[in-house]
Length: 135
Image 1 (cartoon, rainbow, N blue to C red):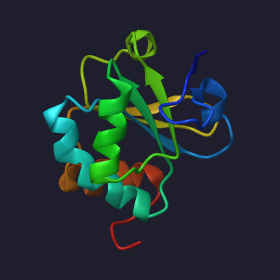
Image 2 (tube, rainbow, N blue to C red):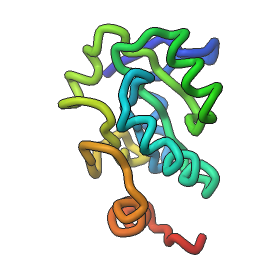
Image 3 (cartoon, rainbow, N blue to C red):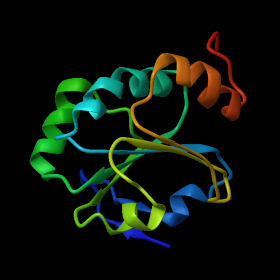
C-alpha cells in the first residue's frame, strides 16, 4: 500500500488508483534518465490508443520532471512523486525506466525493465492488454 504526492496538483498516486477494475500501465521514469526520453514517444503512442498510464516519477527534481513533460508531452493520467524511491524499491525496481502492467484489482501481471520499444509493445504489451497495433 502506498500514497504519493502528485507531481502536479492532481492528488498524487496511491494503491487504490490501481483497484478500479481497469488494467493499467505503470511507468517508472525520471527526467535525468536518457532511456526514459528514448521511450517517451512509445508512451505517447500508447496513451493515444486509449491505454491508461500512471507515472511514478523516481528520485527526481519536480521542476525538471515538469519541464520534461512540458517539452515531450504528458502521457500519464496521474503521476506520483517518489522522491526517496521507497515505493519503487517496494515494487522491486532496479532502475529507470521500468513498466508494469497492473490488473484492475491491483496485481502486477507483467514487468519490463528498460525502455519500451515498438517491437516490445507489439509483441508483449498490447497482447497482454487485449489490443492490437491496428486499434
